[in-house]
Amino acid sequence: MDLSLLNSPVMYIFFMIRAYRAGKAIGMDVSKMRRTIISSATFTVLPSVGILLGVIALSGSLGTPLPWLRLSVIGALHYETQVAEGAAEAIGLSGLHLSEMTPEAFTTIALIMSFCIMWGMILSIILTKTYLKKLKKKPKNIENEESANVEGEVKAEPKKNGGFGNLAMTAMFVGLVSAYIGSYVGGFVSTGGLFTFKGSWLSIAVATIAALVMALFIWLSEKKKATWVESFSIAGSMIVAMGLSILLNTIVG
Image (tube, rainbow, N blue to C red; front, side):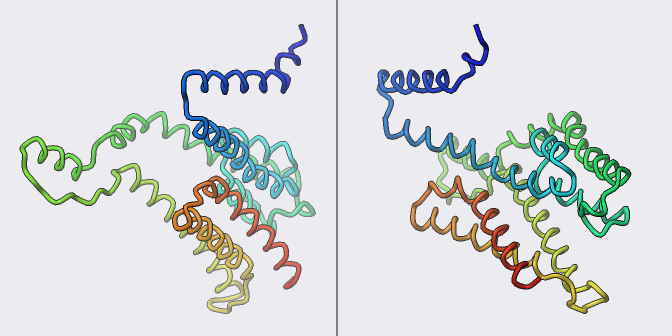
């Protein structure tokens, strides 16, 4: 039997239909099943849009195989583009431009991209066990609330901070965004000399546009109860910002 028949779209559709009918047979809510199907499809497709945009952005100077390998296996969009650009400038190129690319430059950029990303795997082997214990540990305010309930005391409900996991993710996100915004502002303010304001303002404009679009998605989700837009927020803000960056660069440049 041809293996392509077993991997054909017909087989996927068959099992999807069987699963849907089985869900109805055991009394599952049809509306919830439909929402699950839609959300699963969007969470499968939309995150890959950002990866595809990164591959397109890097393929113009590094070709397709390397960016595709990096972004589809272990890389991250914000990391790969930033490190590749930094590596190119460090070896004397003006940026990721195909006209300046040499075999030596390509090898150096690929090596730096691969060497820097591997520390996540190495540190995970060493620190993951300790990190998971911290994530599973209950915050003190929740422990105090539970002990109060056991003792029968009545206390004001403490403000929950979400524990170490939420704090760590928030801190890393704020630090990452601050680093990028700082580099954009510094490049604009200090290019050509201190406080000359002769650098490119395009990066600041694009970051601002992306932030405003993301804010719009959050507003629609929280204020207008359009929770379905959450699935489109990251990819949508990226696509809008990148599209307008091309338009702005065409107008100004």
